[in-house]
Length: 245
Image (cartoon, rainbow, N blue to C red; front, side, top):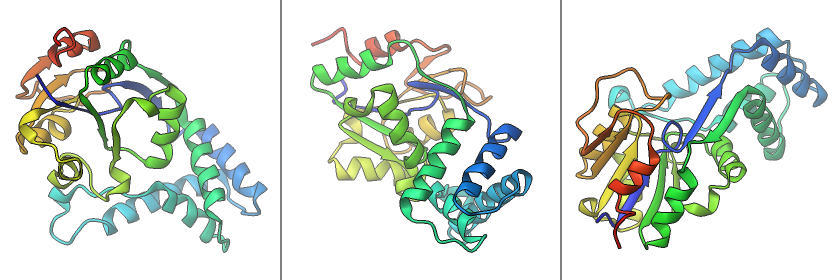
């Protein structure tokens, strides 16, 4: 029986589709900035957004370690700089509003996979530690967890943007394991990405459950403790011991 159950979010518990290159998105975002006294044309705003993403990702990688450090930026800095590039210093609330407007407008759909909430509740009811370890932006993901009714179903939420590194970087896994005093031998990682979720977890001695979902990367089936070739959270529950005591 696993004492601690660690989950990825997007592609594992949550199905999402976003489009950050939609012309309509950038027209809306330019209008949002204009209403706050910042003159951006939609095309220029889009180009600046992706340029800033690249600049921040590059600057956050330790010299000589970019291939293994897997840096993660904070998206708030991008929306803040989009103000500053036009000579405006925005307060944190304005930056948050811009970021959430962007996320809402760029999301085509956001939904739980069948059985996701029931799985988490069942594990907690049986006294298991239930943890979220996700390569994700805190600004977006905490809002989405609330919207989906998942916020209260984890014993702890660990998002890569809060720590400056992301899976499969072992530092990100260790943050959870060390902060919570979790013995890797008592834990299992469930995810849909063979490299980030499965290889990353196996490197630290965790057991693993791989789910091939509609959001999984194109890759061979990984060497996981358990492999599901299609989304089936009911079966995941059985693997994690919901049929047991």
